Amino acid sequence: MRTAVVAANWKMNKDLNEAEILVKSLIEGYSPSGTEVYIAPPFVHLYAVNKWINESGMRLAAQNMNAAESGAHTGEISSSMLKSVGASTVILGHSERRDIYSESDGLINEKVKSALAAGMQIIFCFGEQLGERKASAHFDVVKAQLSEGLSGVSADQMSEVILAYEPVWAIGTGETASPEQAQEMHAFIRDYLRNQFSDAVAERTRILYGGSVKPSNAAELFSKPDIDGGLIGGASLQADDFLAIVKAAS
Ligand code: 13P
Picture 1 (cartoon, rainbow, N blue to C red):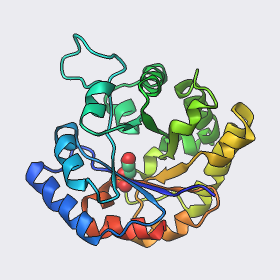
Picture 2 (picture 1 turned 180 degrees about the horizontal axis):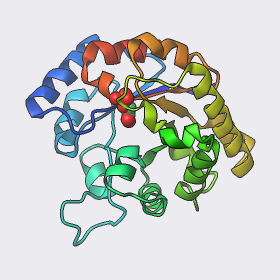
Picture 3 (picture 1 turned 45 degrees about the vertical axis):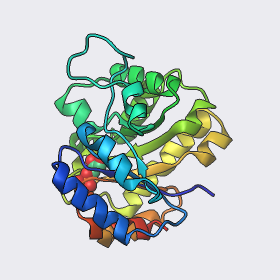
Picture 4 (picture 1 turned 90 degrees about the vertical axis):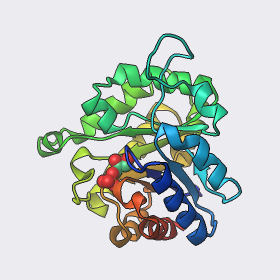
């Protein structure tokens, strides 16, 4: 049995004061269950959020990192910096990093290898654009993103990788992939893991769905056999909504 995961990706939202209000409401309403819950605030709040969630049972994640260990990379953040403020999990390959900041599969792969070498856990994101789905290219696109983004990653290292399928047309649009569309892709991804790595990797890897997950659709999505939880954007900014989604995964 795979342990469910629900992760909050706050993206570029919440100042420090708002972050404190949200985290305190989350802690008040949260009762730990078997589900792993991650909060990924902006970099500048990681240190504070780590202190606030201490002992709550919730875990901390970062939204990005640089592949280099240190040096002349103005404005960037390394794995050791993240670990030093309590974040040993990092989201990599998010479609907003790919689209707005031109992160290629190759660059994402460098980050993946660097994070794994530093002993971090990864939430690796990927997913097709609307035009690619309309052209029925979504399986090919996802396969290429997995194969290039995870190139050089061993079966052993895959135990530190959580996958997050986020069809770009469903992110922040209110349009969710239907539970059937999501399940179809998740089953495809699990088959890919079986072929590329092993049965064991396919069976143990958590595959999250992301894209307009809300309290009203979470339970049905999470009831599908290959959907092991969610990566939540907009609905993670409201404590009640996020907690309802966490409950739906438990
Ligand atoms: P929304 O839940 O706002 O659609 O965002 C999904 C996402 O991109 C999470 O990483």
